[in-house]
Length: 244
Image (cartoon, rainbow, N blue to C red; front, side):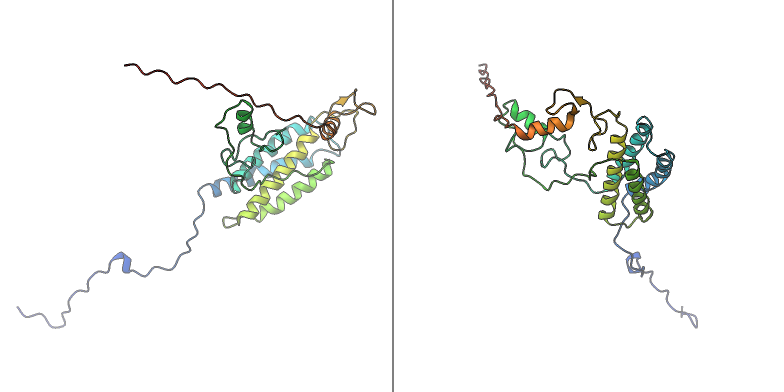
């Protein structure tokens, strides 16, 4: 049967790969970023208002709840920021820090505890870059806490889904510093009048009269020489005889 006049064959359907789509960016928003950023912005104003409501030098009990709120904010900001190494140990990068590591040993408390026990298998991994969160220098005052909160509000206001990692890390540092200030202000104040440790107890036997216990202990550690660490040799158990 001859084709009708004006008849044309149907065009073949193009595959989806051949459809011209606009070029999209390869950037993908991390899954946790929108939720954590929204949670940070929702909890920050209430904490800021509670700090501003304290008139002048408040009582230490007023800073207890503020320190808890700031720590919760710090956990959120820490999860937003890239991970950091706190022990300089590749085996336990986020483990506890040894407060008094022996000379020549690392700062990982888990590895040092095993080495003190005489475990020959306890060896710290390859040292990595040590990167801790910021601790502001003393003295810690209410005005310093207010200034830190102003910095936090300015930085959080500029955050968005495409913020670089250094801005997220800066937010975690600022919130951690605010938590340290509030924690020190929440300590009971004594007659030591120590600018570095406002809530430190008194050491009545310190040289020069009663003074801050923390400062006296730090000075004593600097002046005395620590003996070398004693490593106990753990006896090895004999291999069990095979049953035949």
